[in-house]
Amino acid sequence: MLPRSLALVDDDTEYQEFLAAHLRAQGVDVHPYTDSNDLLADLAPYQHEFYVVDLMLPGVDGVELIRILRRRTEAGVLVVSGRLGPEIFAEAIHAGADMYLTKPVTFEQVELAVRAVHRRIMTTARAATAWKLDRGRSLLTAPDGETVVLSPTDLLLMESFLEANGGVVAREALRRRLGHGEGAESDNSLHATIYRLRRRIERATPLAVPLQSQQRVGYVFKAPLVAA
Picture 1: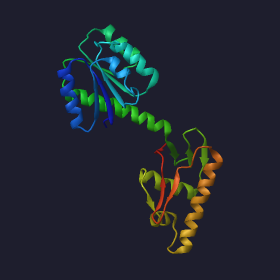
Picture 2 (picture 1 turned 60 degrees about the horizontal axis):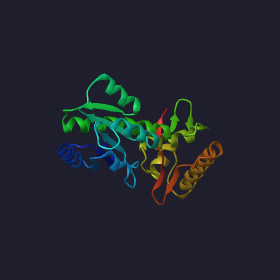
Picture 3 (picture 1 turned 90 degrees about the vertical axis):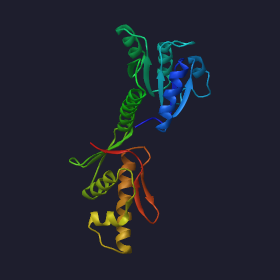
Picture 4 (picture 1 turned 180 degrees about the vertical axis):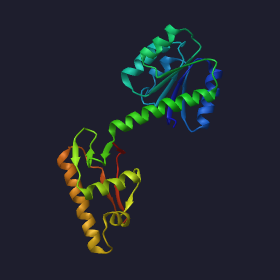
């Protein structure tokens, strides 16, 4: 998993050019800066999903740049620098860097490090905003910590949405899961079951209920949903 937008701050223009080309070939929108002040003076310096930072920079030095970034963003920060020594490593990590690579380093190694840090950050963010389904206890936990006690029918529905992983679940699939037959009466019964589940969630939490209808297709749980 790679970030969509990445700021590359390095005053070695040749290294920066080739690393940017490598990352762009992987689909990353790379924004290069040879001076940390150029990044900070940009229109949206804190909107990137990731930052690759050298420590020896004109303008604000790399460690101070990381401190500034950390006041404004939780995006991934990877240090790629020729500065050596355990005290330098510790200073960068304490400032808020997620990982430190020492030059010389290959473009592939930088890419792998970016992937690893970004994947960890996105997984953590997803877990923090996810709804959690506890099948054993028949509980749905909202991102704000409130819990919804599920009926056996509710649990069957939520298991379908969990397995769909954000995709639309067709009405026919839900009817089969609930043991319903075909026809308008069965559709009405499914609609009533969905409505009761939505109301149960609404009573438990002030958050918007992500359970939505897809006209003529089925239903979708439009929020991250994970097994507890």
